[in-house]
Length: 114
Image 1 (cartoon, rainbow, N blue to C red):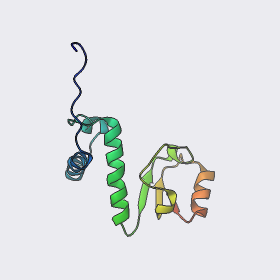
Image 2: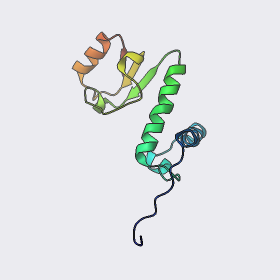
Image 3: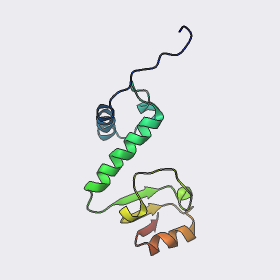
Image 4: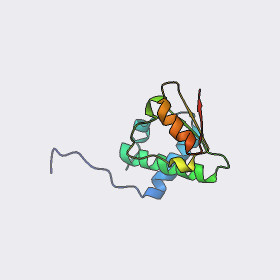
């Protein structure tokens, strides 16, 4: 069918995740959009793969410290790498909702505003 964009063949998740892990671990900073340029990937698969990598890192950690933009505290998210019950310490900004931080602290998570 002429005129339709060519779709890259799907890359197995294990291979795709290993490529992303290597890029993230060897580099200092990588944009999701740049990772989505890899053959067989999209921003959706990259975000999913990065969350899987973060979950593996959190499972391996003795102390789980999560940094979250203050504007995202108290909001609703579709997905993320872990639940609040899997976090030991949360570091956020001054824009974080004070009531949400109180609830987080009551859940047993040390919440720090940096």
